Length: 334
Image (tube, rainbow, N blue to C red; front, top):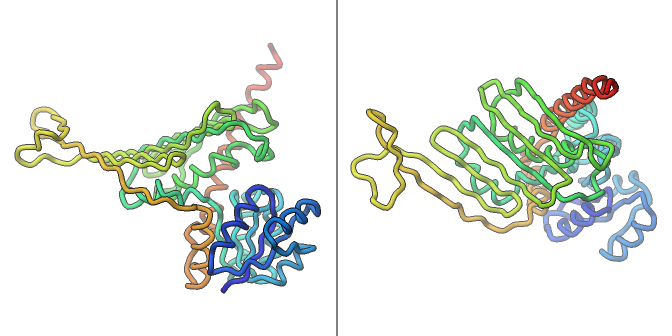
């Protein structure tokens, strides 16, 4: 059984604590939180030891679950790596791309495993259709959320859109060729709404939209590939696969058939709604990390995956800054 400790007992940290308590592969030895008042409250609520320092907690565990604010991810991870502790770290992996690259190098040198909390990889609506992905060439995602002050310390790109960046990168097996973006800060000091276009070397294009000032919640992605359309609703946990296949002989009278014109034959349209098995995605990702450690396998969402998602997020953010700076002289001249 792996001894694990949690760094950060805020809203998400408490969810992680609840989940870890249900995983028999772990022994949850305690947590550390920078707020003594919150630490006391969480310790009493979950009957769990509150460590006096990060260093004290690290000495007592094999694995550390980092659920602190993004700005502190790298510092906490470095302390853990220096003591040869395996790391589960919430997304985004670090605050900067440079930090993420350094973290990967340190973890490789120390021979410790790192998994990043891109939890949508474990969403049952996504896992139910993974086998249907071939070579998607156009992707459209919408991730809209009602305003919540929690998370506004980072741009909406790193807060929300990074989920879809990771999903897109996981299904498109090609390098990013070009990124363009537009967005605006509405209620916070960083962009609250953003639209980005990612172009890949293989010709695939992904259009991503994220907003944290929406009137409703939405987390939908659509994937288009040769003879197939795959829809994933991450929020409602529903999926649909629409496929085209050649009609041989007489089609079923009840089927939907497309006549492609002279000498082009006919295509039958089939609709499939995969069975979605309810799950706790956070519990599953934490459990999978224990398996990766115990079986000495690559974590499902590796540090490199986290790095690549953050790298694209940074490219999008840089495009937004360039757009904003280019517009400023025009605004000043009005």
